[in-house]
Amino acid sequence: MGDEFPHQRGFTRVLTQLKVRVVFEDGHVVSGPARDVSLTGVYVYGNHHAEFGDVCDVEVCLSSESELSVKAESKVVRVEPGGLAVEFTAVSLDALDHLKKIVLYNAADPEKVEAEISGHLGIKPR
Image (cartoon, helix red, strand yellow):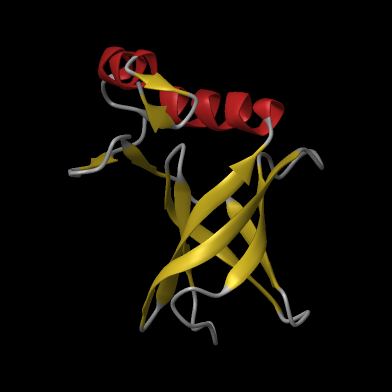
């Protein structure tokens, strides 16, 4: 099972090394491994040329053995040397279901994650 990041957010973030592809509005594409993922976003390792607020489309590959992926409209919420964090702004119900499974599978405390999910309507608080 994965490790969790302590957080003050609505949802648990879990460590993962899933591959992530980020496509910006200007067509610039970056990719790299994820550090962590939650129902509301992902942190991507790498030295990316992005700025806070940049709009992008994110694709999180669910498996190295298949072409299955989660796609979400997103925006950059943090840029650091070595990585960037994006927040999902629009996620399909299917993609949200896959994200829930990723987080539950990798969570140290799946019951806590279930409680977080049941306390929200989609990815918004009830």
